[in-house]
Image (cartoon, rainbow, N blue to C red; front, side, top):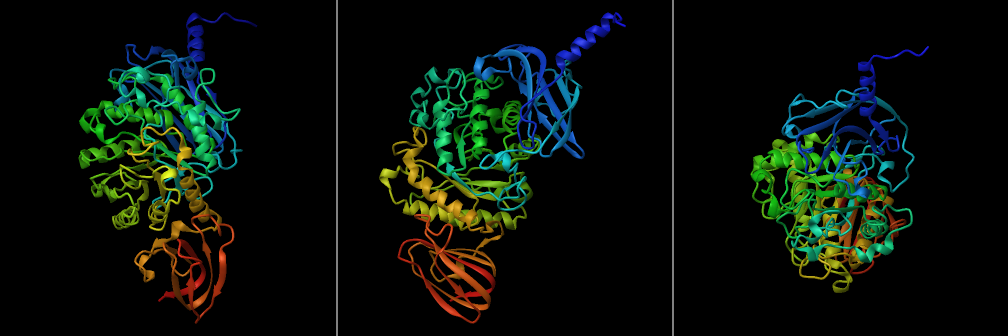
Length: 593
């Protein structure tokens, strides 16, 4: 029998319906699950400021698992396509780590600068979805490699290498450090394209439009094909990382920033950030690692004079809210950080560690400052992003080894990568200027890996075509992508337990050899100029063979294989006087004469 409900009950039911969260996305482990709420109408330029004066946090729980995930103002909910700067949609993204039922509970606060307050009850209730609870059921992932969702969250696990939570696989990276203004792209919304600040550096990524494939994402009726194609190309070369600076105000490019305008610090461009997300989400499906260089040397003190104040907190919070659900990424505290104090740098790292619900890898990039002041318990850093300054790349091996050893001795092993090998003027020059890539391959690529480094990102020097600022065609370095792929594929296909290995360069007589060892089991010896390696087997037995780092020969089946048995002395000679990797595996004890 129908009964008339009291007016107050009807109002409450309507409000409840309006504020109910809409759960979308594939409800599977490691996939992006989005919850969208109908909240207060707001606009990018409105009062109250939707970025500072509202704070959306959603707590997701399953058993003892709990993730507090920041949310963000999403305009009309489809800003990437509509270009909207106003609306009533508020959104949070979550990457669940387990199958089963997850619950969520919403905190929505309002008040002046509430978004950067650390107090849970700061301001007052924002109404609408505040206090709302809900649930959803997650199933197992159905993705296959190279999709990152097939491997899970890439985590810092207190070792010198990152590890995927879903598969337990350790990670080696190789890819592009340049161009740093990857996101200075004409198809993104925003005034940066015509504001008179280095507009000539804005990219169309035209050479990579041909790499876009039917079914790949676009926005606003077909925009984005160039940059999506660029990511496709890099992945097709077997690369698994690219880096970018999301805020280069006052820097070398000045076309990339998350804000509504160049001079703004407290309001974000909703549609532009949604478009960035389309690129990053596509990169996930290709197995890409996202290297967020959050600032550069020219603007390291731009926000709050370098302090962890409201401008910096708001910037970090928006990056975390929008992008932390991506499974493979690092937060780089800044490119070439030189002027910030130890306390400032430590505060930046602490904010990411305590506010990113997934506690992604955190690094810092050097130039003049070595950042030894952040080792061990002095900061929440989990690794280091190395830059060098010699065009022949000869600094790389020793510098990587230095940070690996120092961090080990400090009690907190860092994940160390060489993210800008070479010097600023040259770096990795185009293929037509250096077709063999001998120095880059020997000194930077293998110099990093054989020192216990986690990988290499290639920088393009500013004195050459297709530079760190002007590059729009990654094919200009295709020979190096090829040789980099050979290296990381070698470790995978030969099942080399690199995470259990250490540099032991003193094993051989040559000062130019690299030795990387799991004592008594696996020995990798990199000979830069061929030569001989005398070995005595004191106990056990071993097998050996050769890998060609120039061509990839021997990747699946080592070349010139042989056996070594107890009480046997043997001198193994490289096939020629080029660089070769000698691989020795077995059980026992070896002596290198």
